[in-house]
Length: 199
Image (cartoon, rainbow, N blue to C red):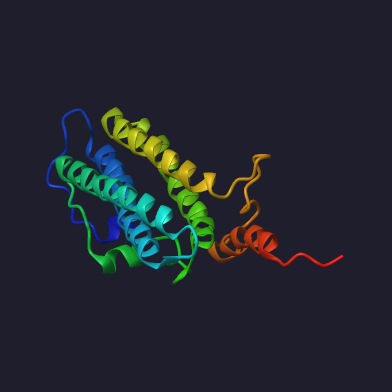
């Protein structure tokens, strides 16, 4: 966890104890790692998406990359404001993260969107847990994370809109890995492209 690599805090914001401040900074450091990873994954998809819906997905992702990169900056600055030391190095991220590396390389828009469905789900769920933790201690940090999570949920909706059918069912429903989600998202396309049988 981040507390192993983060130097001790030199000061704390008024109104929070050292223990409370450390709890908030630890939650924020975890979000900093998640946002750094997410914006790199989104850029990776932007570079590696192919197929008929390439341009739409390619162009949809760049604004998301910019916003998530901004989240990382805001969280890092909040850590520093609270007397902590934000850790932004790749090695620390890899050591601290609780998730695996993104699984897809060059692939279709639908496959990447299927995988991103799970990526966004994980980040949003972790954000909500962090909101619960910091909300008991620091409403300022809670407000920061609530605003970011609301926008992430909208980005997730943009992704899911490509995976949903007219009945509201997601192609990725029940998938537990990015590969499974990518395969499930490809499947509806395969069914629609199969040649019709002659009568």
